Amino acid sequence: MLRDRIIAHFLPKPPETLGVAVSGGSDSLALLVLLNDWRREGGPKLVAVTVDHRLRDEARDEAEQVARICEGLDIPHETLAWTDWNGQGNLPDQARRARYGLMVDWASARGIDAIALGHTADDQAETFLMRLAREAGVDGLSAMAATRRQGKVIFCRPALHISREELRDVLRDRGMAWVDDPSNADLAYERVRARRVLAALAPLGITAQNLSNVAHHMSDVRDTLYWYAFLAARKSVGFQQGDLLIDRKGFRALRGEIARRLLQDALKWVSGAEYGPRGRAMDLLLDAIRSGNSMTLQGCQITVGTEQLRVSREYNAVAGLRCGTDEIWDGRWKITGPVTVGAEIAALGHEGLSECPEWRESGLPLASVIASPAVWQGRELLAAPVARSENGWSAEMIRDGEHYFAALLSH
Ligand SMILES: Nc1ncnc2c1ncn2[C@@H]1O[C@H](COP(=O)(O)OP(=O)(O)OP(=O)(O)O)[C@@H](O)[C@H]1O
Image (cartoon, rainbow, N blue to C red; front, side):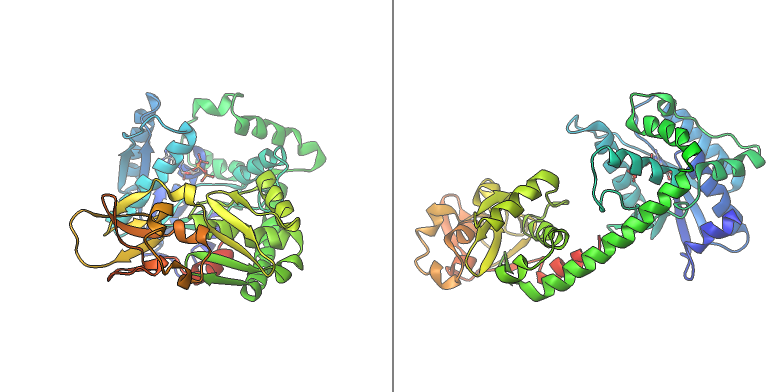
């Protein structure tokens, strides 16, 4: 039964209370209805949430429609409004980030640990087709994760193996209407075109379910590749302060897919970026390493030495960063020292380096030292803990080497 396939996602330890993100579309509404059947038979308490992005006039009515449906089902419901778009960046992407951010804050404030999303096998299949156009590799063609943590909240996708039509049948059976977002018919959207193409592929026996299964096979392969990248990293990766070092001989022996993953995560670890470089940029880096050339990429300096590859922070990427001594600098350095009025953290730079005669004792190359955090009071250098000019201050990485290894296993 459909409901049992949904419930299976949460077993053996269902949450006490489950948030459900309901846009009003058929997928999330059917999910709500099925979860509600479970609630009535002793499943988790439910709280529904809708985000009104304030981008379309109808969105308010849709949120109200969801609120009414929830009232009928006896499920508490809240609408969250997105009001603080600063006009920057790509709108759909910003709206999506804001939606997840609002839901995380909402759930955290109410002690809700998990939120269910209505992604279906059709979403998966459409994404798969869209990625084909971008010549995606294994990672790009991999299925969405059934769960994803953001902050304290776990987002779950219990309907990922179920088709949209199966979910719509649930609503049809109960005579329930759903919101049809007008953009779903707008061929300007790639996803809408992918939906059309998917329907046209039926005579070949290619269905949403097939493609979703292929995406799941791909994610098994991706996990396997990351596992081998993790094993390789354990053998050939080490750390020196904020730098990541890779044994060159070990690296040379790796197959392309493994080397690429190990390196991508190395750049993520050093730069703190959400994603590592991909595609062409990554090809260029691997070529440069093979030819023994150093280069910069994604705010990192990759230096090819005889024995080792060194990934360090690029000075230019941090030259303009300033923060208070009680804040984390460059997303990874925590500086501790005596309370000092007007002290700030900024990169050491060449100017500061000239005041650190002992810097070579750090064992780090010059490029790494000038990109390391220092304590300044105006233009006066108070301390440079990485460059061995401590003056009562210390610098500690909040992301240690274990974070790097763990990240390889959590893609
Ligand atoms: N405005 C909204 N309010 C509440 N939940 C929403 C809203 N929009 C989407 N969702 C939730 O997200 C699910 C997926 O919808 P959609 O594919 O539009 O989202 P997405 O966030 O763009 O997906 P992805 O995470 O793949 O980027 C929906 O089934 C629903 O559970």
